[in-house]
Image (cartoon, rainbow, N blue to C red):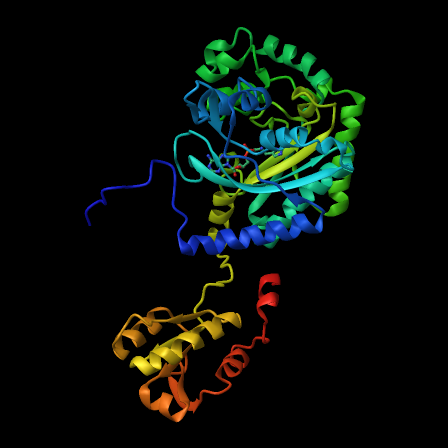
Length: 436
Ligand code: HAM
């Protein structure tokens, strides 16, 4: 087959109808768990002033250094497509005076994000995240609750068994001052064994050296001083309680002192969900506390914690686990007609069936019965209703059971009720349909 003239740009994908079955299902599960826990949905713009991301995610992070889609307005202002959701949510929280709301403020989002990285399996230039942010509480029980919600979502999507929860604390900003010095001292003299990224980061952001994926860097990282040794009593206690609460909630975790996360705003608890088969490369989601970010962005010091997961990766793991989301697109009734009189009768019937909540397709543009019935087969319709001139004259309709291959001629009167009953549904009014 020859290549089509136009193709989507590298690393971005169409979401075709079969994949939307998964997207819709994931959204539904996420919405359900978020609502149950008091979270309300927020959407922030696709692009923001570039400084917002530089400041919050950090100048030396991979995202800011290499992965942002940056563009300039005609007046020369610089913007970036959002690479993640937390920065925009915090900006909106401050901009819209949400500090005045009762705490905690609980927000969730389901949004596209953009990162300019090398496309590969599970890594795209446009991807979708669902995320939750809880602002205004510092209690370690909240950390455990947030992790629990993420875990429950994974459970309901059928992928929890395929993932491990990696857990660590990176302490407070104070704790890390001393630790950064210890790390710089440790790495000084060993620079030759480091990759270029790590060499460059050693003085600005030495903790990032701990989660470099390059083999030589990992060997050095495994022997580096541990943050544990400089954690304050408060930080230790916070983390001990998070672990205790997770035990209480029955969520298992692996302690991973190398987990530091790639964004600068984190403090204390950090976590990621890794695939048991692919390890760190393709985490489905991650998050942590960011107690310093709101103040950093000009607000009052306010503790916060959040989490986000990649929808494409989540869906890949669902597919690997053999999870099939319910197919709400399935055609229940196909209405076929022959002749002008029958077509006139078929049109309102199609709409009445649809209004009753029955997925109905009518091939009113096709003329031959053969073409219509072959379409009904291809659509895998559960039933067909067939109207010809004879049926119209006699006030009947042919009901064909497509699964059994049997058919009968029945009165057209009451046919919508009959189809509702056959499909096992209740008679729904329009209003109820919207509420469903
Ligand atoms: P993150 O770890 O950078 O965290 O991204 C969360 C998830 O988004 C990843 O685990 C991954 O599944 C997905 N993801 C990231 N980049 C890509 C990509 N290029 N292609 C496909 N999927 C990708 C954050 O973004 C933080 N904002 C999470 C957070 C919320 N922390 C506190 N609140």
